[in-house]
Image (cartoon, rainbow, N blue to C red; front, side, top):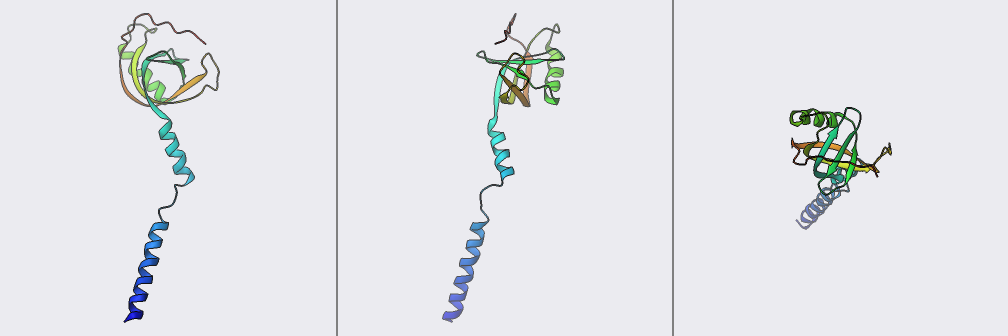
Length: 132
């Protein structure tokens, strides 16, 4: 009887240790995905796109180049409903990642739009954006 209880105890300990071992650190792919999610921030500001270049000015003043990709094109098409002229800005709330601007075309930083929260008519009149 003692041998049976001892054997049962050893089996339970081994099974318990195996379950703990499965809770290991995340794989490099999971770590990269987690870091990428942490790098995405919510931003509010003014958006402008002329078909070639796009800029985003955060409320408070920081200005970023915008990576021209599918999400930028989508934001531009959503913005068209609120523009009186092709030179108008639109107010947008987006989720984006801030990176160094590889093109160095006026702004040191570039945003990569990850998600569009909403778009509305700009509340600001006569916006002037100046290059650094």
